[in-house]
Length: 116
Image (cartoon, rainbow, N blue to C red; front, side):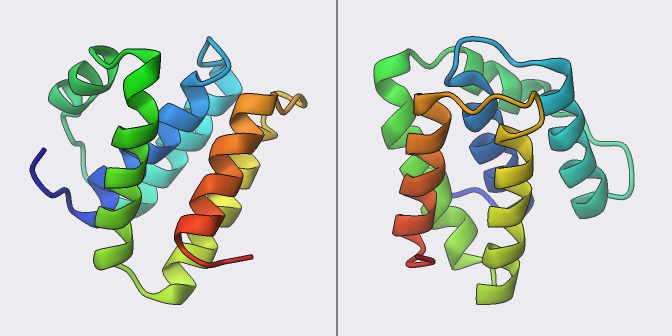
């Protein structure tokens, strides 16, 4: 995989967080859209990124997630990572139900960034 910039890495992280429970709910998709609008105030074609994510099997998600967490970390400040963690928390709570897998990936991200 080639390194992603912070916004694209964030997109991958949020999309995987959205999908780990088996379905991306509309409330979660809105949270991803909000993040992208903050990071890219102009229209952006994410078809290639979405295709990459869609081609992953569930057993590939963890490695992909960790790779993009590292990309995000490389291009961000500690405060940006803390802000992103809040966005991730908001996303997994968007449908008023946090699955075990969503929680596991959320905690994994906090651990990868040493934000415990």
